[in-house]
Amino acid sequence: MTVVRRTSFEGVNCSIAQCLEVIGDWWSPLILRDAMFGVTRFDDFQSRLGISRNILTDRLDHLVARGVLERQQDPQHARRWDYRLTDRGRDLWIVLTAMREWGDRWAAPDGPPVAMRHDSCEHTATMVPACSHCGSQLRPGEIHPEPGSGATDPHFIPRRD
Amino acid sequence: MTVVRRTSFEGVNCSIAQCLEVIGDWWSPLILRDAMFGVTRFDDFQSRLGISRNILTDRLDHLVARGVLERQQDPQHARRWDYRLTDRGRDLWIVLTAMREWGDRWAAPDGPPVAMRHDSCEHTATMVPACSHCGSQLRPGEIHPEPGSGATDPHFIPRRD
Image 1: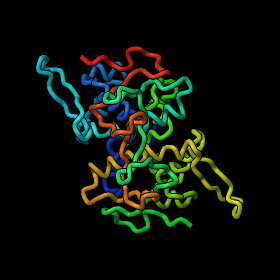
Image 2 (image 1 turned 90 degrees about the vertical axis):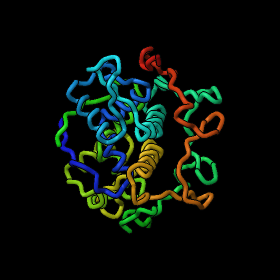
Image 3 (image 1 turned 45 degrees about the vertical axis):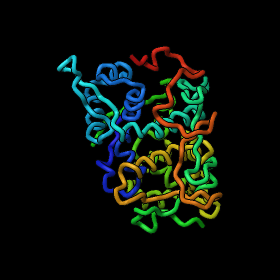
Image 4 (image 1 turned 90 degrees about the horizontal axis):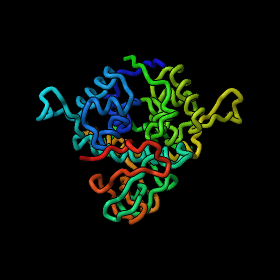
């Protein structure tokens, strides 16, 4: 399937678009998933993802250019390069966790392929979205969008009739 | 820019891939963002996103087929259709919120375009990922993947050396 994509969301004042600018294709989130699993080598990404070398090179270059992965020469093998998450990349763990858990809830009839262990309490856990102010659980009907400090378009959040 | 995509991740036993199967392109998350803002009409999606009618039709059909939006005839206008989130679609709010807040942290130099108000405490809030078992904040260094109840491939989570 061939799709024509907009060249860039760079100028769009929306933080979801800015996140898509980094991970907005099918492969990038799976590459980042493997990076979070500790995968660093080109050949390991390739064999795990079953992806062509061309596409993988293109996606890794993109993720390096966007500052979420960094390329480092393997000290033992001058011609081998490692790809490691930057702080900016590691911080995407919440996005990937939210995606994984949505898939677990709605598209994993045989159970979650991967679970998450919380080291400090030693239990298998899921992520509960809590309010940064009051600490109680955030629920979709109890939150509403409002203009942020960087808002530029007064009509961006539509009025609810 | 033209990219060739894998046809489907349907058979891949990974919940991130299953989530991408639904929202894994640039436009779908922005369509869902607008749906969460309360946008329902084709023309409103189109004018807000600046997207061609062809692509928008294709993406809406995809989201309806995947069960995250449903199409309903407008009772006042026989030829007008509304698109509304299903429960499955509404549950993607955590993914979109995680994407938005990542963009706010790393790609919004002038401040967040959109903030989130928590109705029950009446404060502007961000989402804190909390552990479903102990309730404390989840931090990336303190969580580890483990095989879930639906795991099929013993090598899917690589051993850390």
